[in-house]
Image 1 (cartoon, one colour):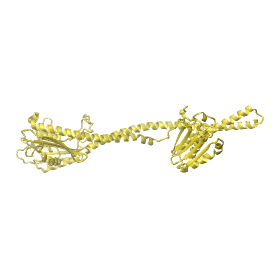
Image 2 (cartoon, rainbow, N blue to C red; image 1 turned 90 degrees about the vertical axis):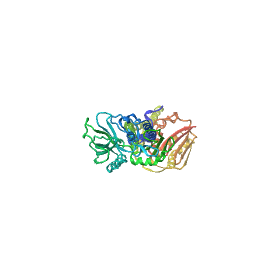
Image 3 (cartoon, rainbow, N blue to C red; image 1 turned 180 degrees about the vertical axis):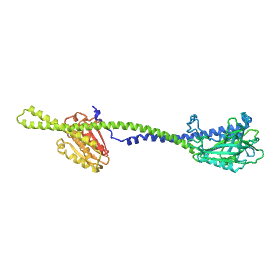
Image 4 (cartoon, rainbow, N blue to C red; image 1 turned 90 degrees about the horizontal axis):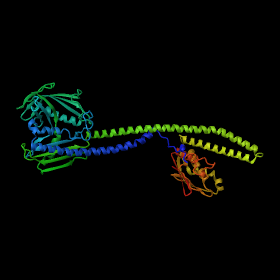
Length: 577
């Protein structure tokens, strides 16, 4: 029958060890998630790049070939839509949704090193329309929605040093320095016929933004990191000076809105254009991909155009995308770090719960051990008195007492001796389990086995049992505790070996193996638990059921294991080093 109160106790552990083991799963899962996130993110950006490039390209082709009604009504240049679309390379709203409640994490994968260059050309290869960067503004002259004008400043048309410097600094700050701009255009020179403008008085505000949230800045925030006012005096034919009311008022006209630099970085546009302009005379439809590196790719689409009023004969669209750009990587890391922090907190919580349970269990075990030790010590004194009285009575009645009286006295003395031995071994088991500091030295295991076996030579010869000791082994261990383990295994083998059988003790660098012949196979399932004797042969008064438990505790103190087995009437006990 199993004795649940004496089941083998696991080795005590600390909170740090519990937490370290618990962190294995979060670390492994985080690595797996990180691999998946990077792989999914890169694949998502690639697929969306190609789709978006084709979508923008097809829209551009339709606009040229069919002429948008809104453009004709509002006098809206084709380049305006091109430049606005080029401001964001990849939209990920389907992947990470922004519900306009202030949660801005991951609304776009803006690629500061990428570009979406698009242009149409005539039969001579000259550019008709393009999304090369310009400063755009919508001027409203009255409350009438139709009374508006879309116009832009193009640095290719007007060579103005102040604006050239502004364009150069703008793209450096936005792409490399995590700055964003807002503009206050207070007055400008306007050419209505050509939809062209030259800034007159322009206030530039710079704001710090985050790599995680590239669009997270407030134009109304008075904490701009830098403010600059640019004044340009131009004398261009066909231009008139237009002044806006400042500060803006709801019903004050004329006024401007959406004044910003839209479009592709001029340096990148020119680089891409120089690379692909020679491919304008191509077949009717063609698309493809060029890999610039493991992370940077270019998706291109080229097409000839049907006859149109602009004289454009073809269109080229090239999207350059870096799947490992800093904004994308920042978001990858945010997802991974968030997962790791959450999983770590879960592991920490579970570890704290387990540690609290362990402390309660250890406290109860200590209480049990203390109670057992106290009871054992308290019982030893009256037991010794009983044994002394029994011996005295035996001496007094040895000659005059009846056979029945002497038998009773002998039984009392035997039971006292058995109980005293059980108490001694119980205290030995408790003492062995509580050893904390070991004096490790090189110990000759074979020599210990020979020393233990020598005590039983006479008894073994009387029972016609042959004992053999072979092998050679030295281990680093505490000699006293390992001697306890070896002595108990040898004693167990001698006690339960069948008469006329053999005992074999073998030592090598991996184990000490003690094998003895038994009369019949023994169920070893619970034999390592205290007070478990296994079968009838082990249930006599000479057995306490503590020998193997003591051996296991002594082996465990030296970080060794004990394994027992019984097959084909051979009982095997091994200390595994």
